[in-house]
Length: 396
Image 1 (cartoon, helix red, strand yellow):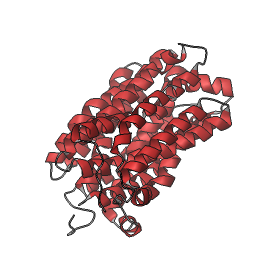
Image 2 (cartoon, one colour; image 1 turned 120 degrees about the horizontal axis):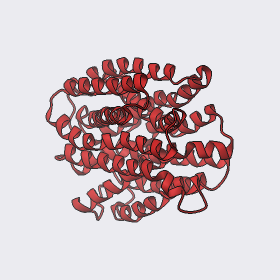
Image 3 (cartoon, helix red, strand yellow; image 1 turned 90 degrees about the vertical axis):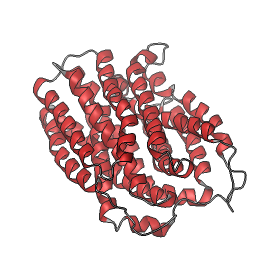
Image 4 (cartoon, helix red, strand yellow; image 1 turned 30 degrees about the vertical axis):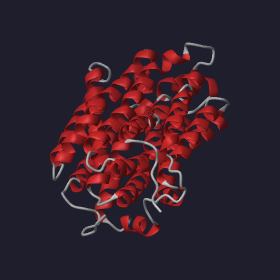
């Protein structure tokens, strides 16, 4: 039996924006204070890499299961529980030593996984005629707050005596706000229609197009999370101050913001998005080459180019979930698979980047690996951008 929540379209849009605001800041706020954390907790480069990879591993392990969980307890209720888990994880991560740091990161990773997978499906369900606009607002909120988290992470830590703990723990306030806003979205009857079944999820793993979208998703995520984990540390090793290095990462975020709104509008009006994939590839390679050749000399231009490229890439990956599917169930299943496979691939980025740096004592080799991965990014993106559906000739 179908039931309705008490949220109207305007209130639903506000809730989407609030939940989106919680989906990156808890991860990206760590990068600027990583040197302080490493010094205080005696973290090695490899440990730092794995800490950055924990959320990605969670994204990979749990993304496939989220549509099934939603089918059992409901789409809206699944999102509510994820907000509670996020708040708990933020408290644990900032409260103790190394074990708490990793345990809290696991909770945060699982919570963000739920939002990552199910919010595109909720948008398709609630706003089927305004996918581009609502997806754009969702992505802008996610990345704008993330940029602020990066830029002000160091400053927040200096406000009290807790240092990095307050920098990464303060975002629990945002999750509490999202919780109370989302409560009216929960249908009165528990028998909410699920968004995907096991059969549909299994079908996705047999689809070549679904795999192409998944790898594209993974490669753009790999670039973003490598920079989120290592850019401030890399820049500080080249002589930049901790505060300015944190702002450079925020510029990566800032570069994403306009593309997060413009990208969905453009992609939604195109039958195929190959031109956008080519643009993304060119911008990404240009930004990486500037860092490789000139290091900090033109770093603002470099990080803005990389931010624009990653923002447009993430926009395309998210839009593929809704443009290449027929209905909410398919969108959730494709989102689940793509994020499971994609983040599994991306999870190797931060630790591999750290290992290569530790092994070579240079940032050149890991940066060149990123450049090589951009070729695979281009290939899978062009395939995913073609005008076709993962499942043809279905309705609903």
